[in-house]
Image (cartoon, rainbow, N blue to C red):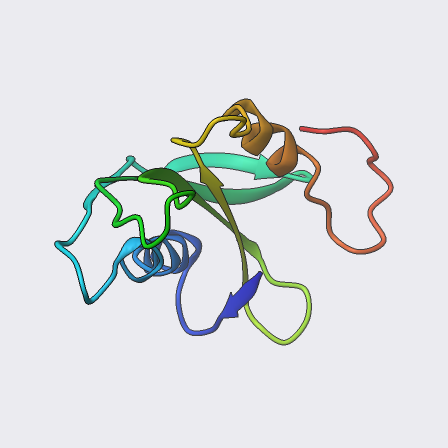
Length: 123
């Protein structure tokens, strides 16, 4: 989780999603293939939110068990502390045996709540 100031939800989500290029990149290897989803306008705890999914493939495997494919999901919501936008990120390795199913990301995102929220139900 991180925060952003001086930008709206869409800009903050895209800015954080572009971090996947660093997460999946390796200066000692060819750059991976990076694909960005269109932004999805969603709700988190009754508030507007924006989600991007970034898919990386051809990721350099620095050791045998390193993934060569992964996703990087970003959700930006209105901030509630020191930043105007709160940004949540989830990386899911996908090419290794026993990797979690992508539905795990959806489940995790559905549990996001503001502090003190009483909704208690995924949206």
